[in-house]
Each structure stands twice: as C-alpha cells, then as structure tokens.
Image (cartoon, helix red, strand yellow):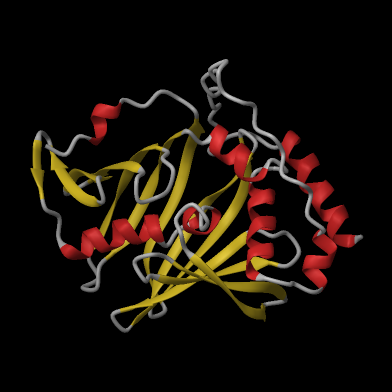
Length: 278
C-alpha cells in the first residue's frame, strides 16, 4: 500500500511541478500527425509485489520504464521524445587537473535504438568550441565546417554518456541488451535494486534503482581498470516524462564531470542536416 501511495504522490506532483528547469518555460511538442496511433498506457505493474519480492530484472526494468513515462511507459516515451533539445552547463576535470567548463546544447533525433540514434552535442568552452556527432555508428568531430577525428578520451566520454546513460536502461529491449538482477543494496538509508545491463558491444553497466520510487539514482561501471560512478539528482517531470536536471560523474573517487541541465524540450523540429558528417 505504501508503494501505491508513493506512486500517486508522483502523479500529483507531476501535474503541479514546473515543466522545465531553470525557470524557463518550455514549448509544447509539435502536434502528432493524424496518422500516428496515440500512445497507449502500459498495464499498471504490481509495485508492492515488486518492491517486496522482485522476481526478475526485466520486471524491475519494465516498472521503471512505466514510472519514467508517467504511467504511459515505453509508448509515451517513444511518442513524446521523438526529438530532444537540451541546453545546460558542464564542467570537465582532466586527469592532469585541467578544467574545461562552458555551456552545451544537445540535439537528438530518436531512432529505433541507440545504435541508430542521431545525436549532436555543441560544446562552447572558453578555450575550445566544437561539436561531437554520433551518427552511422561512429563519433565525428566538427570545428566550424571542418570535420575531424576527436581524441580517444573525448570519444570515450561522449559515447559512455550515450551507452552508459539512462537511455541504455530505459531502452534495454530495443538495444538488444541483456539484464541480470544483482540483488539489493542499502546506502545512506536508501535501498536500491541493482540491475546489470550488458549491451551488444559487451559494455556492462550496473544501475541502482530506488526500491521506493523506481527512479534510477546511480550507475557504476569499470573501464580500463578505472571505476566510474554517476549519480542523478533533482528529478522533474518534463512533458509527462521523468528527467534528472543534474548529474555528477566520478572516476576512482574523483569528480571528472558535473553537468546541470538548464532547459530541455521534446518533440520540437530538429534539422537533420545538423548530423551530417561529410
């Protein structure tokens, strides 16, 4: 009963919260063409049963997807997030202690899975202005009108943000990833389900899902002997879907990235020419 009450609180909060971060009003999504079928809500999962005795990792994942779509689950996420325009501020700290800080803008055209997605991030740092594009299964850099091959570390960080981010969990089925339940863990009084997601490229990421809210609060992974941890903060409902406005990434216990979303909107027109790589 406690879990059902919490879920009702989420629904009420969603309709009373601001639909954007940083006090910026968000435009409404473009009208859905008449030919499209309206999103049909997923069947309501038994939250109490899952919280008390999880059966499978898939059950936990599907419940989380249901929550992130405000009860509409996967169909709502697919319908609302056809495109994404995100603006914010990010800080990167290199292994040598050098800090790069500035604003960014990310544009996304959603595809059937993350491998086919089109993603562009424009970075406006004080000492560097350039763009990174994920398209056709690879990352390409753009400086002005010149294309270049980014450094391996830059590519790794950009692609980790894609394939080791929230969408890697929310779209595990579309991506052809496998799930494994790793049990429960309690940290600072908060209890989590731990679910390991391994994608087709062999990348394994552990997601920590709150037993009470079914929000993804943290993820961890190891790469080249370095242990990474990313935490998500300040969740809000934006156009009926759940989004954290702040995330911090640690590498071996040291902060290497701190990103704050200033505004985000879904369903707006995005020029496909932004993702050209030649």
